[in-house]
Image (cartoon, rainbow, N blue to C red; front, side):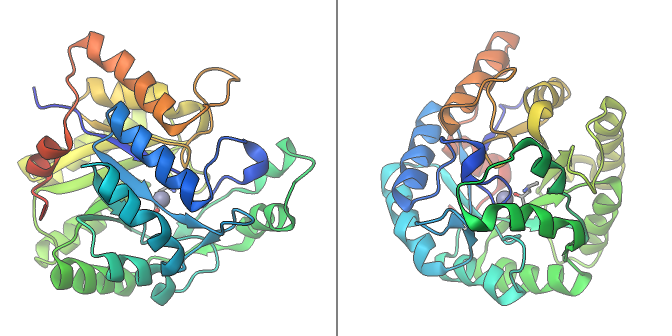
Length: 302
Ligand code: KMH
Ligand code: ZN
């Protein structure tokens, strides 16, 4: 059985500082938590940047450059930079840091969709920073835009231009068919790293049927040409990725996807979630891939 690659999505652009004191947002904290997550067993570090003063998601490449070199120096883990960015960011903004850093891996969202964060407003009556409530509220009328043209631009500029490979973010079965379309056009090269995502409002729900269906369709479309990974939002994170791993998937954890490490208990760090999934998978005889092994499995440029 192939080893399991653990990805860790360190901070993202969904959660806000009031939701957890452990959500890293300064360059120091992002670097420290990323390195600690790699030491705990994450082979891939998925990274967004945030304004160092307020924690608001930013696409500013200067901010990325305040933590990327430190992470590179402090770990051998694979760096994966977001191309999804956050609400209100243009394609040029979303591509600025990836084009500058030319990482081995970037996220690539496989379709436009609603991305609902506004239900979280009900749980947090008092926000520390002005932008937080507005950020959640704005998701009511925001389309996460990833058109065919956008996807093609990312594949051409980053993929062909820099040899970057992708974590293909598939929020529903339709996105697998879009990926198959780009495979037909030879704009993507196997092995494809397919991230099946469950539990985002606007995407497929966290139901076991969806997980199994995603695998069935991916098997049908890609055969041996893909490496599967699973992530799920909020409380679904650990149960869902465990089910995924038992069905042959790699897994993604991190505070981007869930702030918790157990029922009602905030994760104190990204590393805690990495250790938690390790402590579940290893007794099931699922071995964890090192960064070097993950590079081989995903055929990254290294
Ligand atoms: N926020 C996650 C559901 C990206 O950064 O491009 C998926 C993600 C997308 O990480
Ligand atoms: Zn992300």
